[in-house]
Image (cartoon, rainbow, N blue to C red):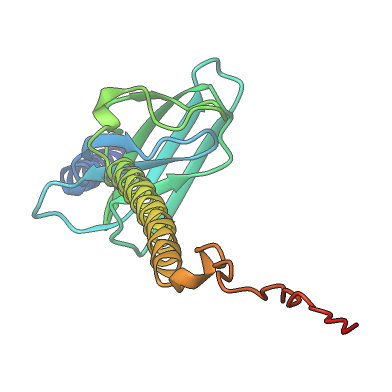
Length: 216
């Protein structure tokens, strides 16, 4: 009977180790393809993939500044999201993140450490080429191209309108000149000719010589 407690302790230890092994075997694998996109001065988007065949009910994100000044944990369950937006980041700062999947029997191992740097307030696009294919960046570029094309079209239309207005003014001037010339040609010739002097005129009457006869 003295050996009974020893046997019981041994059996409990074996069962406990078996439970640990079973739980470890059922833990989901670590997330893969962890990427950071849509970089801004105070925000960024983290996305990842999960191997198929495992039931995932949530995720945990470890966010830490590279200088060690701040560390934050984001945990969400009952979700199938494969992306998360990180808010309240410091501008022009280096961060390190890791993602863990949450399964029915616990959390997975942490993913690889991903480093990224937030933008400055004056920056408009991420400097890193890995984010050039991001849909948000592409959408902004497309909108800028469309805006530039619209500006060019508006400028061309204004130039054409100015040419048309100038042509109409020149046409009106030519038309007015032609009408003035026609009016001058249509005036009667009497207005331009000098008045004729009368040729007849009044003739002075000459008195007939008077003859006086005196009889003696």
